[in-house]
Length: 171
Image (tube, rainbow, N blue to C red):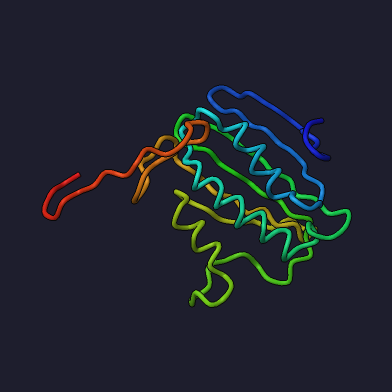
């Protein structure tokens, strides 16, 4: 056991793949605990820290807000698998959602979170089991360049200052 109520379930090493599973009981700050746990597991992997934080906040927050995960006694299961090419994050809720995950046609007041996940992840998706529990997953590249601005990987410290480019110059 580590963290406030965190139970680490399984840690496996299978060839070039590392898989770890953890269960996070419903509590104030649960998404923050998930983010801290994942940052610890992904230090040195080249995963962009900002992308990781945003993806965890969006998917974890959706589970708390829209499913039984956020209810007393609820929990969120998190699986992280690391290969040479990518990191896969999987978040399994406690079921009870009234909608299915998805990027809606219009970015209304709500529904933008998974649009951000889709933009940051190499790939993402979801699956439901027979009990109604939903797993939302996102694949992140390792040591990939960000689309804009500066790049900071998990465990790399503060970001470097941005490069200033004059009109007509190439960075």
